Length: 94
Image: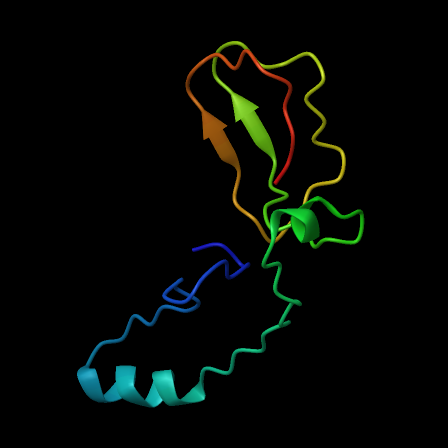
């Protein structure tokens, strides 16, 4: 589970307990706060300088990392993205 929710259905918590009753009690204690971002509904909005960055995770290439790969401004809430293939085009965070 990452710490950043990207869409409805993303897991945000897990409970492990010794009994169903303890699990139910633990579930009731979970509180989640969301930062709701302004929706981006068009390509022009997505390309605007003020558009929110949806994915800003550390990126690792097993083979063929682009020379301009920049992992200096990653979001620590996100899990690393690993590409197992060469990338021949200019890299851009989306």
